[in-house]
Image (tube, rainbow, N blue to C red):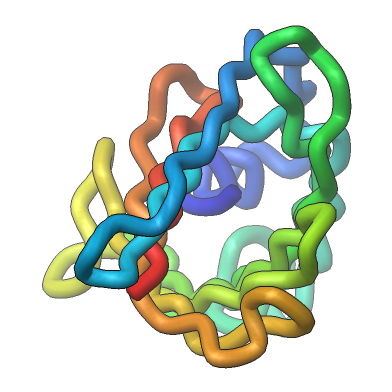
Length: 157
């Protein structure tokens, strides 16, 4: 979903994205009422919007979408998000994503770049959801596995 690959796409304006292998599984809630869902996302589109000064600059947008698949390749859901560039020289962006799963939607938000999230592993706040996730809180830990692939660990509290 999200993150360092988006910055690379913004800088590269139109870089091609490849399909990725996917694994997914969910654990039942434990005694502490937490649930973990593990996914690897497959990006299917990135649209770059060059706002303001020509080239990468504050206010540029990255619009990202893709599939969430099971380990057998069956589509489990979709995701989409928007990232806004704040300080391109430092790679600082702010992103919001919505994951659409069979039981509802989960929305996340985070900032990236020095002083926020790291390069390979990032943490995004779960800020809400719908249906089964209507009171969702917790975090998504996203780990880059390639320039176009991320493993997601959704930790619902």
